[in-house]
Image (cartoon, rainbow, N blue to C red; front, side, top):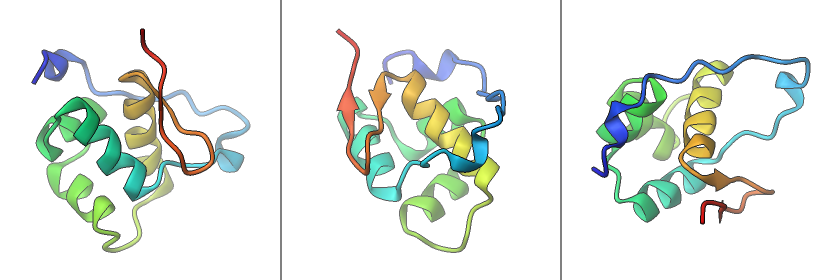
Length: 93
């Protein structure tokens, strides 16, 4: 798992633009996990959410709370991705 589970759960600082932030999509989440060879359990541990939350988010089941999606979004960004307009861009060298 590349030692990524050693990260502490992420708690983003919510700024004034929290409500206008474009959030990660389920498709971006799956693509980033695939790129990094992470399981849903791995990403859940890194983001500080449950594996069920990741699974439901990626399957578009239910309506996750915005704060939960922000935790997933922040985890993916901290793992080295940018999330421009429904795309996915690796930014680490």
